[in-house]
Each structure stands twice: as structure tokens, then as C-alpha cells.
Image (tube, rainbow, N blue to C red):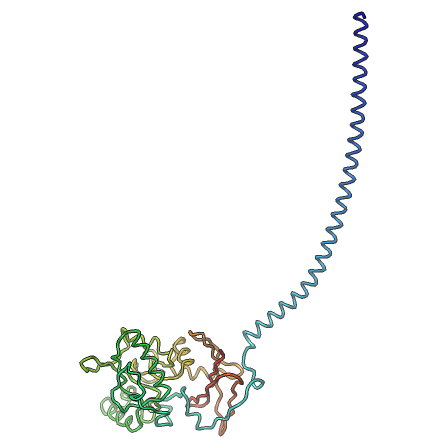
Length: 355
């Protein structure tokens, strides 16, 4: 074969090769266009399907939200009503769950919350008295062996001085006076007036018949050292424990230094008075003397009692009922422990334990 023929054969081979390549490219392009078209169709079908699902889910969510919102609104309303009931309406609803106790005029002068002073005489000469030397627990001293005290006052005194002795290790505190008769008060008053004059003397010693000692609810403290020397109790140093903790046992420092204008009596850190733990705690926490506290309680009724929780987590409901001529029907709660005390002025105070 000549050179010419070889070149011709190569040209024909290259021509066939180019035709095959062109044909393959054409087939490939057709397949690509078909695939792309198919992909676009599938994409749009998928998109439509997802859109349908989204619409369905959204519609379902709207429906559920409507139902839930309705229930949620009811629940929120119920919660708000419950909160209102707890904070506002959780008060004694007389007369639905209350009965009454008939109190007479004489009952106005009985109870641990009697306000006794120069304007409010004590109607009793000793209330439920017991001999102190026979009932003392030995953690404090007595100025004499015939001294008497109100029984509840003495029991709480034993508890307090027992704890004081355990806390500080001393028992040099002496009860110099507890119950004091009207006749003895008369003697002390006359002596004080003779020495200091009526105006000044009456700020140190109350008038006969107007002393808290006459009830047996109050007592005075002194100190006696190992040599038998008696000194004044000022409540300072380790003895400050008594003022800080006496409310735990139902006692108050009856004549505080910053309340002399109200009590009419000079500061007596040695003079303690039993009023009950519910009231002693509240008075201590709110810096109230007994005169202020008795006035404060007149703002609270059975429908709107004073409700508080003391430092020992005891809950109390306290309210005032004005005395009426003759018999006073005092409302008291069913199923709860309560005490009724006259205030020795014009009404009754009900103390309810709501633990």
C-alpha cells in the first residue's frame, strides 16, 4: 500500500472515530437532559409533598394550640383563683365553720393578755397561784420560801431558767418578787410617794390594785453572788440571753426603755410578764409594748384576723371581739385549738393555733 493509501485509511479511521464520539456525546447529552428533566419533576413532586405535610402539621398544631390554649386559660384562671384564695380568702369564714362561746362581763378580766396598769386595775388578787419553792426546778434562786406565782407562769419560768442555766452555766439569778398582794402594793406605793412625790413615785411603783404582780403573771429579777450579796438585774452581758430568748417561753420585758411614754413606767429590765408564746413572739418581732399590741389587735376581726408564722414555724390566727353589755357571743373555730382572753379593757382576744 502506498503512502497515499495509508493516509487515506487513517483519515477514514479518524472520521469514523469522530462520528462515534459525536454520537456518544449526543446520546450522553440526551440522557443528561432526560435525567435533569426527571430530577426537576421529582424535586417538584417532593416539594409539593413536603408542603402538604407542612400544611397538615401546621393545621394540626393550630387546632391543638386552640384546645391547649383554652385549657391553659382555664388552668391559669384556676391557678389565679387558687392564689387569691390562698392569699386573700384563706381566712376564717364565720359562721360557716365557727361556733360561739358565751363570755360574761367578768370574763373580760381573765386571761393572759390582761392590760394591767394605773388606768386598768387588776380585778383579781392572785390568779391560779402555786407555791414557787415547792415547784421550782432549782435553776434559779428565790428571795423567800412563801413566794407564789401563777401556775402557767411558773411552769414556763422553770423551762426558761433551765435553758438559761444550761446556756451560761450559772444559777445566780434570783426571783425577788412574783405575786404581790394588793395590801403589800399599798405599802410599797405609800413609801415611794413619801420619798419621791406622787408624780415621780407613780412612775416607779404602780397604784394599789393596778400592779401586774397582783395577777401572779409578772416577776422581778435580781442577782445574788456566792457571798449572798444581792445586786440589781440590768440584763447586760450573759444575762442578755433572757431578753433575747424570753419570748420563746411566752414572756416579754414589760417596760422597755423606748416605750416609757406609752407604758407610763420607767425602764425595768428586771420585770418580766407572761403573755403566751404567740403574742410574745409577735411583740418582740415588731417592737411593741403590751399597750401597743392590745390596740393593734382591735384592727383584726374574725373575718380579717392577724395571721402570722413565728420563728418556730408555728402559725397563728388572732382576732379581737368587742365586749357587749351582758353576754358576748365570741366566735371560735371548729376543729382548732384556741384560747380566749379578756383584755381587761373592752373586749376579748381569740388566739387560734392553725398548724
